[in-house]
Amino acid sequence: MRKVITYGTFDLFHYGHLELLRRAKEFGDDLYVGLSTDEFNLNEKNKVSVHTFRQRKENLEAIKYIGHIIPEESWDQKEKDILKYKIDTFIIGDDWEGKFDFLKPICKVLYLPRTPDISSSLLKELNLK
Image 1 (spheres, rainbow, N blue to C red):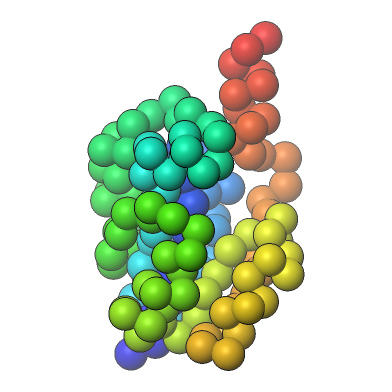
Image 2 (image 1 turned 90 degrees about the horizontal axis):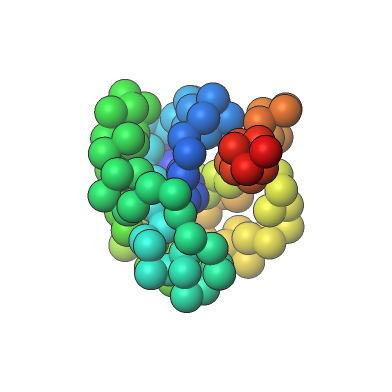
C-alpha cells in the first residue's frame, strides 16, 4: 500500500484545496492530511483562521479522498509523521517549491501546481471589499 501525505490549513475550503487532495490521492492508496491547529497557525504562521480547527477538520472528514487527518502542531513535525506513518510520498503545492527537499532522503517529494485563479488569500481579500 502506497501512503501519501500533505499538509495545510484548509481554511475557507475551495476548489483548489479539493484539487490538491484529489491529485495527491492519485499518487497513493491512502492519503494522510496534516491539518494545522489553531495554535500552530497563530503562534508559528502568524495567521488567524476564519474557521476553527474543529470546523476545518469536519470539512476534511467529508472528503472521500482522505483516509487520515492528523493535527499539525509544528514545522518539524513533517519528518516525524513521515517516519511514524511510513509515508512513501510527501505532496504540497508548488508555492513551497524546494522548501521540503530535505525530506527526499526519507520519501519522494512532489510539488504540485496550484489551481489557477483561486486561493484562500484571494477569498479573504474579496470578502473584505
